[in-house]
Length: 523
Image (cartoon, rainbow, N blue to C red; front, side, top):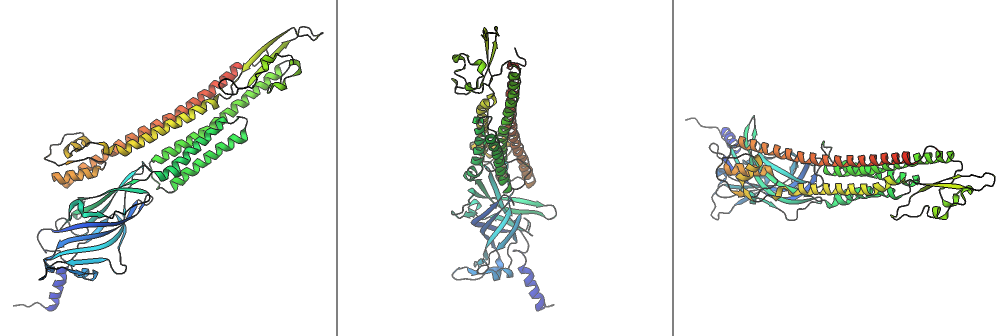
C-alpha cells in the first residue's frame, strides 16, 4: 500500500483550509448583519459617501468544531483569520476602504463547539452614490452600500441578511449637518456578470433629505433681496442718472456673484438644477430693471429734444420748468392757470406740465394784447416707471408661487399614495394588468427599485424578468419627471416673455403719445 509523504499531507491540509465548507455539495449559507457606527460625509462634487460600520459574518464550518463540556465559544484575534476559510466579501462601487488597526487590527473571530463561526471587523468605506441634483437644494437622495462575494457565485455561497431588515442596526446619534437621515433598510438582489455568472448581493439603503434652511439664508434670501433692491430705482427721479445706474449695475453684479458661488460648490452636471432656475430668473428680473431705466432715459431724452424744438419755433419761448421761470411777456397769465403747476395730483403721482401760451397781439403800437389763446399739454414721461412698480413685483410674486408650489408637489407626491397591494401598485405603474399569484400588502413609496425588489422576492420571479421590470419602471419615472420639469420651464419662459412684451408695448405707447401730442409745428 502506497503511503503519503508528510509534505503532501501538509499541502492537502493547506488546500482544504482554502476551500469553502463543505468541499462539495450545496452552497454554504453566510448570514450577514451590520452595525452602522457613523455616516461621516456626503459629497455632491465627488458623488460619494463615507461610512464606518461593523460587518459581521455568520456561517458553519464543521472543520472548526471541537468538544466542550461547558459549550462555551472561543474568541480569537485577526491572526487566526489567515489560517481558516472566511467569506471573501468586498464592497461594490467602493472607491476606497480600510480595516481599522488602532491599537491592533479591529478583527474578531469567535468559534462555537458545533462549528458555527462569527467573523466581525470594523471597516470604513467610501462608496459611490449616484445623485440626482435636478431638485437641489430641495432634493432627497437614496444611497446604497453593496456587499458581494468576489469569487463565489450563488452556487457556492448563499449570502443573505441574517434577520432580514433587523440585521441592520444604526447608532441613534448619527447625524449630518446638511442632511436629515430618514431611514435605513436592507434589500437583496442577484448580480449577473457575463463571464462569471450570478452572485448574491446585499444592499444597505439609506434615504437622505437635505436641510433647506441653510440655502434659504445663503442663497434664496440674498437673491430675493437683490431683486427687491433693483425695484427701488422705479421710485427714483429719472434724471438722477448717478443714482439709478450704479444701483442697477450693483444688483446685477451681486446676482452674478451669488450664482458663481453656488455653482462653485456643485458638480458640473449637464442638466438644470432647481436653484439654477430660481437664481437665473431672479437675474433676469434684475437685468430687466436696468433695461427699463435705459428705456426711460432714452424716452426722456427724446421728449426733451422735441420740447426744445417746440420752444425754438414759438414767437416767445417760455421757461416753464418752474412757475417762477415764466417769461416777462407772459407775466399777465391767470394765476388760476399756473398756480397748481408741479403740485401733487389726486393719485399722489407728480406729473410734469408743459404750458404753452400763444399770445396774439392785435395792437403793436399800444402794446395791448387783444386776445390770447392758452393751450395746456400734459405729458406723463413716468409711465414706464409707474407700470414697472406693479408689473415687476407682481410677476416675481407669481414666479415664487409657481416655483415653491412645484417644489412642494415634487417633495410629497410620491408618499401621498394610499396603502394598496403589491400587484395593484405594479399595475398602476406599468399601466397594464398582471396575472400573478398571491402577494403581501405594502405601502407604496417613492423608491421604485425597492418596490420591484419586494415584488420579485414575494413572487419569486426570475432575475432576468425582475431586472427587465425594474428598468421599465425606472424609464417611466424618469420620463414623468422630465415632462413635469419641461412644463415648469415652459411656464417660466412664458412669464419672462410676457414681461418683456408688456415693457415693449408700454415703450411703444409712450413714443406714440409723444409723437401725437407734441406738435411739430408752431400753431
